[in-house]
Length: 228
Length: 228
Image (cartoon, chains in turn brown, red):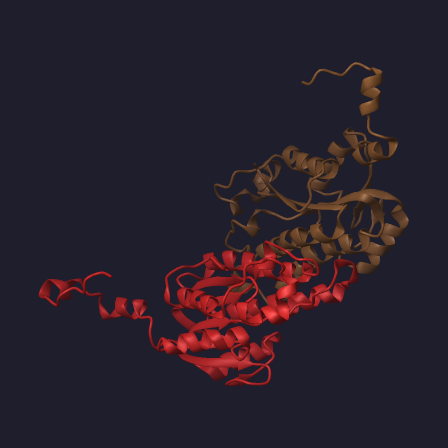
């Protein structure tokens, strides 16, 4: 632990100005949490709230705002109703799992709509609405790089979002954008473990810390692969 | 250069059986070349033809088959008309280039339709139609990993295809699938060089060699990043 500096005139002179301090300040952010009522979203929300942030949750049928965030009009409505925001965190996305030979063109399109288009729309519309140094944190997953059988639509969606994050980071600075890309959650092993044979699971708490790092830190264009 | 082995009974005994030889044989393949009439497709086709393969080209308005390969029905028609195939190579895909804030949801969807859905459809329909040890070689590009301003839709599309390739490789074996992921072509620097400031360009001939490696080799689930 670093020793706390003693107050002194010299120290005061080194303090950031109120303007700079505003940029560095990491507590009391107002954060829109899309998918904030799901398993991951709930864990992320609890962690961010415990750090002093205000969370506004969006879910299909619960949360502070009910909306289908795959619909650009709904995304716009939620931004309108939410008011000023410092950050957007997303834990929302659904894709079909089937063998490639059982997939249809509509299945792949549904993966695009279910996990890619909605998250892109958060950024596309959000960049003009969140704080000048605000951030976006999107959700992807391990299947972009270490696939499983039946995971070709998930891979497509995760790969699309991760590459979009790299590209978007160039254009939205000083706003920031990162992605969290976990394997299966330890807490979900009973339900999904068989899909990820031998994959190291990641505790929800560790995934939530990646959101904290993305929201409060200065990094951008990063894919936080979990477990580390 | 390895010394050529002398013919001998011992050597004959080591020769692959006709069945195995059939698997290893790399000449006289019958190859469907989608986008085969474009700049890259033409170079790939010339290189593969020079190696003894038969090329069947597909283009929107030229080639052996005219078709819009973003339409699943058209893809099926081309496969029906083409008959037996050993490999499919794709050099086709178009995406919009604009600043993120100028993109619309339809722009991103058009990138999905223009470069992702059609190439996936080649694999989804093709796996039941090409040879048991046949291969697919798709086109992506450097923007999935090293983006440029105005390249967020291209990044999305390339990232989607590359992750799909990794996932599909698991499911279609012993058929194979790879992607070729080049920077800007040396021959296209006049036209596109300004979009890739300082990026090392890649000669078309080198890109064509990556297709040769994918088609004639045994690798699968690989992204051939160019220049190497």
